[in-house]
Image 1: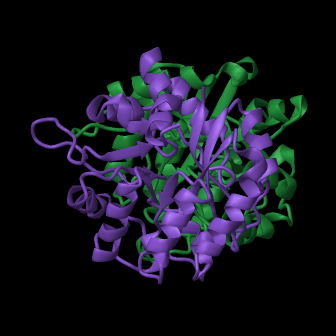
Image 2: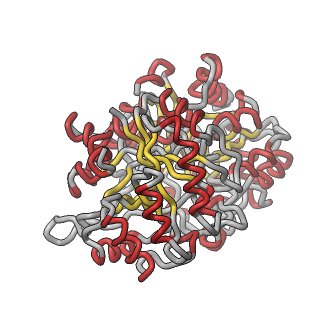
Image 3: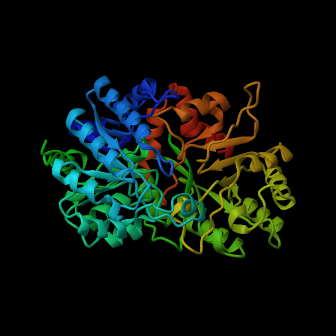
Length: 264
Length: 257
């Protein structure tokens, strides 16, 4: 179980939650830390994305306040601020507040817009200016239910387009194992856009998924993550047959390199 | 002892599998310190005449009977399943029956399922039913996107109380406890590979609710990586005795080994 512990692992994609009053659910945060301890995970990048079609500024500010509270509660939490890019001015102000004042590490986007939507331009420009990554919920779902419920779910083709549109912005495609058609995503990303990373999280633990991800994008662009699905996240990496150097890059160094791009 | 109740050999047409023959799978499982495994033939999902898959399985397992427990795959909506079931148990030495209502196109609670479950109970073999084979969100365009509904399976459990059912690949949360805290379906056993453990302790909570004699270790190999299931057991807040039950004692009992 502690196989990962010696690497001071960074989980690049995880979450906190809020209670009914929209404050940080501290008990859940403790649960997350306990689970991380058991799997040998040191640092967790956390956000609280809202999955409704159009969350308001008031709503995304409140969840970001909860993330900031989590960061104060335990320094192992690295915050990612969530915004709805549809509210352009408010989203930009909120990103600036969270990154500069609250010292969050990045921006988390959900499926309100495709990552290559032109509406993203100001937000991506700001992210590049601040030197922080944009992590986006992503996947290529093929079942009717998911297609209906997530019509604006970004997949690898959208990321390829976004990589060209926003070449100065570091983009992280969330959870290769998030349930979508991961082999298709990887075939698309074989083009290896230089500013696109992918995280290994998600409940899908198809044999070989981590090795295939590395083969497609190169080890330098893969980030370890669990998305709160801890044993799957850790176990599929353990089973990937990585070299010592690959472990080091995947579990920590790659994300540290992204953190080092910060400009504020 | 670590007994994996959820493994398979054979060909999956929608994604290339590795280690999907008996010698390779055994080697893979043993590399994870798994000491025995129940194994079914993936081809039985697709052959119209599933008995051919059972014959293939028995032949493949012949050199590995010390390690593998063979699981027959039958379709109760197809011809001659009664004779096939008897042949699988008495002649081929298979010790469990797998049903795939979502692939073989009959309702999980149906006269066909009731009949074959009753027959399996007469042979004293458990019935394995996967909630899914793969996550439907990545389904191939020719694959199904139906998951087995736990409460539909529960109706079958109640209709055939003498049978023992193992739900594998159980992921969609369902309330399995009645208002007094007792299991809704006492003859339903759960394989653990898709339960959360370290976070929220779902595995341990389910063991407390249903009894640790009602959970079974399984990995889903070679479809899935194996270490996640092992980590789930390691992270579960359960006693050593409870873990021993889930890791193997329960399977030994169910398969009459």
